[in-house]
Amino acid sequence: MQFSKVVQVNSMDELAKIQDKSLVRSQAYVDGQWVDAKSGKTFKVQDPATLQTIGNVSDMDATDVQQAIDAASHAFASWKTTTAKQRSVLLRKWHELIIANNRDLARLMTLEGGKPLAEAAGEVTYGASFIEWFGEEAKRAYGDVVPSPMANTRMVVMKQPVGVVGIITPYNFPNAMITRKVGAALAAGCTVVVRPAHETPYSALALCELAHRAGIPRGVLNVVPCSAENTPDVGRELTTNLAIRKVSFTGSTAVGKMLSGQAAGTMKKVSMELGGNAPFIVFEDADINAAAEQLISCKFRNSGQTCVCANRVYVHESIYDKFVAIFTDLVEQRLHVGHGLSEGVNFGPLITERGLHKIEDQLKRAVDAGARVVLGGKRPEKLSIDGYFFEPTVLVDVSDDVPMSCEETFGPLCPIFKFSSEEEVVSRANSVPVGLAGYFFSRDIGRVFRVAEALEVGMVGVNTGVLSTEVSPFGGVKESG
Image (cartoon, rainbow, N blue to C red; front, side, top):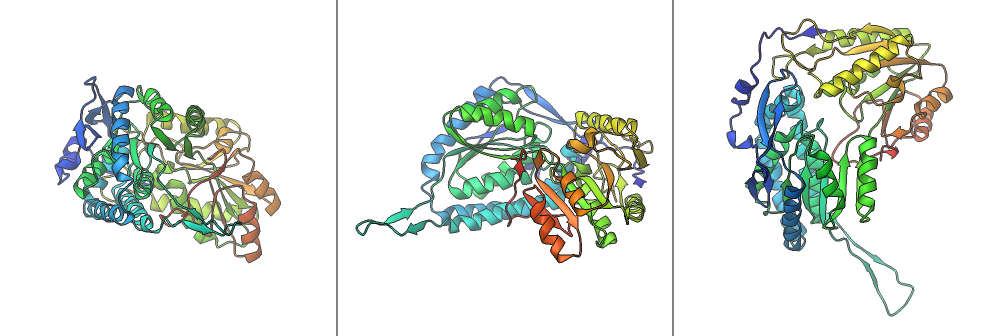
């Protein structure tokens, strides 16, 4: 693999290169206004590639969130009466503004989340697609006429907005996780209160600025950033406040269970997109080169910090050695490690220190149990910047009983397991308590349908490592929500 030769990166200098400075917002957005926390407190946001502070953001607490919920409740009374056409027009304007500001939004995302610039730009486009899609779908929220069993009555089904939605998003997709949830809610006629991840609040606040310019009415969209310390109280307010009618959360299974329990007290509707542990299966009849190519992006996109990324790679014993050699060679050739704003870099840091410690612990336990590191396996020694970097790592001879095999890694560790039969690998793939995404490669049409139906996951990619788009459903089974 390659390493960036940039000697020094000044994160604040890079932040200053954003052309539209009004996109860099440090206050919360409540009732159409930029506001400080009532306490006056702020929290630091850092560049995970340099560990330099890039700004201080308003640290909202439960009292501040109550104010945002009140604003959303007041706005709902009028927003729900707008026509689908009116909402569609506003969402279209918002979409166009996001696309027009892609360059600045991507730079901001790279600085707060470490994502390589080209990948960040791709996320901005991807995120905007949800605003476009749901804006169009707003006009197609059809009801139904049900044949009545009684001659003197007619039965009509109408779809109406549920109310104020509390939204809690993760750090790994700071733009697209906002737009996927907010776009759907606003299109349906709901208003929202959003708590973005404390690691990456700037992307959410920049989206608010563009929504404001698009003419989204005050109170319809509210964003309340908060520190890690205030997160439990803010989450509790969003899940227990009577005015909130639905909660949408993307994050870990453990936190999802806790939030669902809190929301149950007031019987809120909930949408939970939780942790995954995706199997990536390469059968003996697969196109090995295509599978290896797809695994590069499926495993190492965003440094392995995606809920649908390949977590366990299973390769048939007859092609195992050949596949490992091809894949390892591709990783060495293709991945360029460094700051996301440096030229040619396509592999950045992990976003958090706890994430770095987690993968180091998983790696140590796997090696102690007999695993062998084929490539990577340590923090880079050839970089001159001090961030949360870890080399893309390939392992073989990994036990099925170590945490790397049983838990979501959320980092750049790629264990490759050997299997001998279809029945065996399907059983091993389904052995975990979660089921968000799964992938397999085969040219046998019978096997394609058999395995796709047998995998206990919400989404299956066949002969591809990419499965998320704005036009298809997204979700899991079992403890993935």
